[in-house]
Amino acid sequence: MIRGLLVELGSQGALPMLSATSQLDRDLGLGSLERVELLARLETAFEIRFAGPRRFRGQHARGSGARNPDLSRSKRGETWKPAPRYGLP
Image (tube, rainbow, N blue to C red; front, side, top):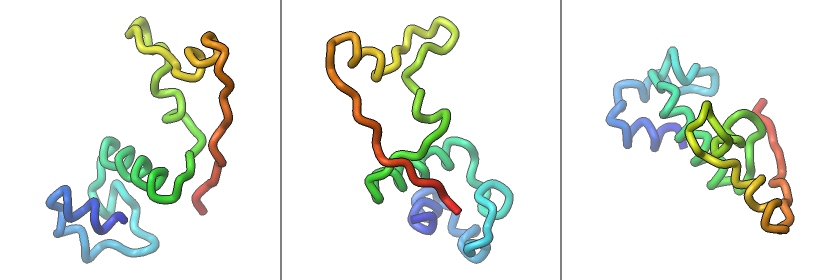
């Protein structure tokens, strides 16, 4: 999956550095947006949801007007069921 992302980004030069111990930022040159994209792809591919700050991306952020979708659901009387949580080693 990481190999595919590197190719899509045009970062084929980082492919020789790709290993099980590669650091995404230092060794492969993936910035924060690329790492978020990788997490999103992993969540989709494995049908999982990683715990952490990304989970609240719709929450109010200093008056931005964005809303937390979970709160919107609860106000409409809909129930919320958490996705399974898995951690990376």
